[in-house]
Length: 533
Image (cartoon, rainbow, N blue to C red; front, side, top):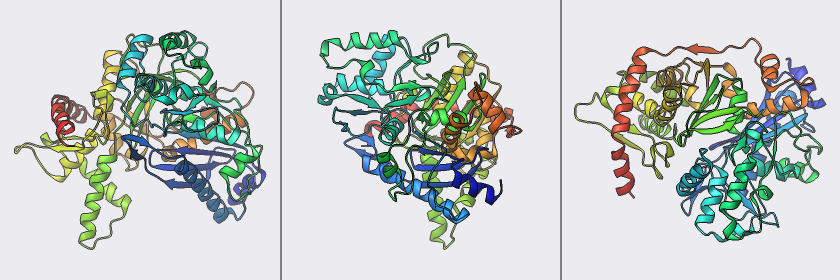
């Protein structure tokens, strides 16, 4: 569309806005009726470790949202010379799950407990056994039950609990709702009803009956909605909260708030069966849309849904690129010490491409990228670690290669269960996130890790904020009974296939050899956790 068309879209409200609260960045993306991004804004932030809890404060949440929104508004003014007074539809997304309980006065009872906390192992294990359904540590129900096991005083005061994007949506619209994809990370979902599993809610209430809480689990969970449903409208109070300048008008419809897993599926057109996507950034997760239920319960495999409610197997790992980024920053410091001002993109591109020159198995080097715990390999805490023997081939290419490999090590552990043990079939998998920004490198490494073709679209860099904008647009603009899958194929991704890389047999074999080392030496990481305090 031309600049004039985009300007008219902004002025007439024929737009959709998606805002996603990621681990390190809050991003806002404004799209036109063709779902093309026409403006964006962002805000950098970091989680805090407070009393051994990874958290973000309420003040940081709202300051970040307001700044990312205003940054988008500035982008609109610079490009089109007009203010943003109304928007066709809005959607919010955030990092998955976690725990935000509120009392009857709508006060947050404990600081937001993010997905990054690995403190709910006992609850996760007991609920998985009770439900015969995998309950990961980051799920809201695991956090709630762990708080019960810990005899935390706040539990009896809970009136409502939700996730980060559910909280933001509630404050802006007054509606206590969540999209089904994120609901499936709070509590198990019944695939047939596309709603909370009634039988398992009864099981949970029976399990906690002796505690005498004044609530039942049904009472405190948000309402479950499917993609395409209207999830409320921006209130006057919400408009002032989102746009402190007072320019934005109330009454704008909102789509159901979704987690970054659901928006990642949407942004990569991976909501159909036998498709999947990998989101690789601070954390990494793979989503595979299943044809049928898995044969066994695997603690390493989560079962969630698409935003439309179809069953998805998910491998989620807490750690991906944080340690890799730390090493790249060290090389940046080294360059600057010599008076060389290195462009960030060029630095990443050069070092990532160097990894392609390394030995297939990284020359015997070993690294663990565990900034935090990693449930797939059984760690409640992490220690980033690099190890080699005197005989290892220690050079820059292998050093970069091993850090790219280890960023996917825990993911491969889970994907091997899915693809090799369960025999799940994948026609294609789409890659998105920071790992794929350097053209061809992360994509090639990923293809070798999972022995499956990996595609990356030009739009993949837009990420989850674009994905939730599309979901808002779908709610507003879908035709009659048009499904999400049909809308994505016809209205968003028509003619876009992406660039596909096939797995290289040497990469596949090299990754398998690296994984023997990775799995066999986990006791080194265990010793680091035990002794390096």
